[in-house]
Structure formats: C-alpha cells, structure tokens
Image: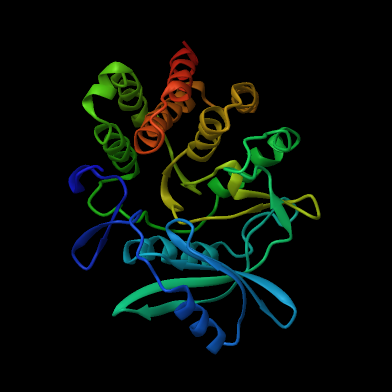
Length: 321
C-alpha cells in the first residue's frame, strides 16, 4: 500500500489523512434498525466494498441507499450528495437521467459519523454488469449516446471542488500531481520494466494545453444504466469535480473498455468517433497517457497481471504518432 505522502487514495478528515479504501466493519443489523426507525422497509443491505449499499421500500416505491463504509469514504459520499443537489435538472432530460435525491444526512455508530443518502431507484440495468461479465455487446449501440452524455456532464455549470484539491494549485497542477501519485505508488521495478516514464513524459508535455472541464471522475461502463425508456442513467459521483481537465471522462471510459473489459476494438472505435467529432488528438493522448498510468496502478493493487495494461500503454504511445 502506498505511503501516505504518495497515496492517491487519501482524504483529509480532522487533520488526519485517511485511506478511503479501508472500510470499517459496520453492524448491518444496527443500520437496519436505524433505517426502519426512520420509516424505511429494508429489502437488501450489504457492505460488498467500501460502502454499505441497500435496497429500500416506502409506499410501494423502491429506493437505493449508499452509506459511507468508513470515515474517509464519508468525504466522497458527501461529495456525491453535493453533486446530486447541484446537478438536478441541468442535464438534457431526453438524453440522460440522474438519481433523484430524497434523503441525506449522517448516522452515528461507535462514536463515528457516517454520511449517507437515499435516491429513487432508476428503472434500468447496467450496460455492462462487471465484474460478473465483461460482455460489451450492449455497449456498442449506445456509444454516441455515451459520448453525448459525457459531453453534457463536462459542460455542467456547477462548482464542486475535488476532495483533495486544497494546496494543489490550479486544475492542471491537480491533474499532474494526481498522475504523479499514481506513478510513484507503483514500485520502481514495475515502472522501469514497463517504461512508464514514457507515459509520464507525454502527460507533462501535454498538460499545459489542457482546458478546465467538469468531470464525473468514474465514467465506467458499469456506472451507466440503460433505462426502460432507452435513455441512459448515470451513477456514482463520488469523484465528481469542477476542477478536472477536458476529455477526462471519455479517456477513462476508453481505458476501462480496453483494459478492464478487454475489448480493444470497441475502445479504438470510441477513440475514432471522438476524433471524427473534432477532438484534439494531442490533448486526448495526454489524458489517455495519464489513464494508462492509472491502469498500471490498478493492476499493481489488484491481480498484478499487467498484460492488458501493457497493451493499452503500447496503443496510447502509437496514438497520433
């Protein structure tokens, strides 16, 4: 696990730097009792990863719960609540739907405070049900709609600071520093073996030309729903910020499709559609290079099978060359 100074997964809470990935073991029965005391019927409740998530009912309607699974995650959950509050009604309704926030607040357990929120359930299914499957067949027909959704998000006229933005300088410094943290969190032996400094050089050279843009921050296929009315639904705004760089969400999407879902052809198709829409190749390559570094970090922290990360890196290096 990266040291605190180099850890890209920390948040500042009460003067402490906390790794938000480290979850507390919360008592689900206790949480259920609290929710029921507030008038909710608890259908499902689990803590599969960093958060407690649940399906609730009230007056015949279904709702979704997200409760921070640690004090550190509370910062990100509050950020998501702020996004849902500010973004309400600002995205094209004929294109994409956001969850409707119906309740938010904090619950206290073991003398610690855990933010939560409840939203109306969006009527649809993920375009990709990862990690259960890597099947991308349902993605392909909706690529243009996905691109339009990312573009609409990038134009949101709201102000939302990044969780760790303080002291980073401007948005370009924030982007560079985040990429540096990803790189230095990877052991030197891995950085050297896969020549990751070539990616870092692209990021350093290209960042001064990048413009500021709002970003979702986790624009992955499994966070996009296909709704019953053929619109898209967008989920998980923990990393949303108005201090992002242009093209970030779509570069993130390309990297996830290429490396995680292992569909290089679809990833390349998305890239070429962006170029046909007038996207700047050099700028897009800059952000893709940053995401390639992030992909190597994901593998180091996960399975440590770097084959797909290396394939993505080699493709990025060839882009616009």
